[in-house]
Image (cartoon, rainbow, N blue to C red; front, side):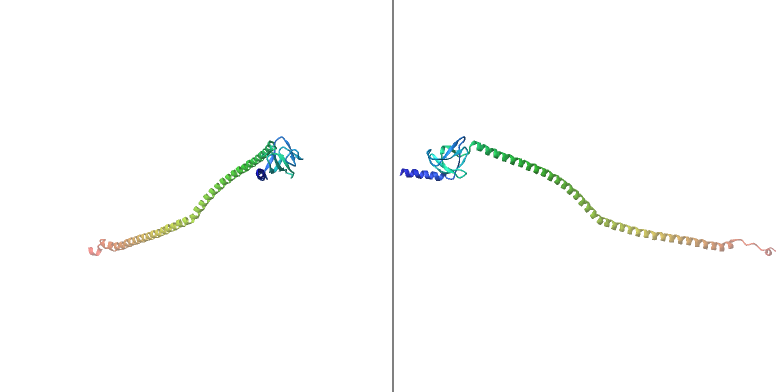
Length: 219
């Protein structure tokens, strides 16, 4: 009964360990054997850092498979859950190189973005200036467009003033004509009265002269 429980535990452990990945520990070359003892045949040797797929684990040995498909047993004490320092260093250096490359790319993108931002800012200033210029031109055009109405209003006012002046001029002309006619009549009447006065005087004056006595009356 006890052996059965131990077998079940080992089987459960083997199932749980199946599919994991482990590595041969640092600075070591180990033997991959065909069985779980040093008496079993050495299938091949495994240098430090060899990547192994875990197939089954017991108390002392683990059945593994290499990347080329070779299977065998290795002692548990010679495998690790993490790659060796050399490989981790190489991986870290690779990651660092990628990070630096990405950093350089981001710096270049940042420079490009900054250059584009400056260009956009410059264009924005130019557009703002152009917009201001167009706004001023639009205001000017609006003022010019409003001029015809103002000019028409001024023309109407000028026409009205001109008509009033013409009427006033005509009135003054008539008044002047009337004054001239009145003056002519006065002069005519004055002349007529002078002529009539002369005639009257011509008729009266002879009768006012003393008459000479004739010689016959003295005799």
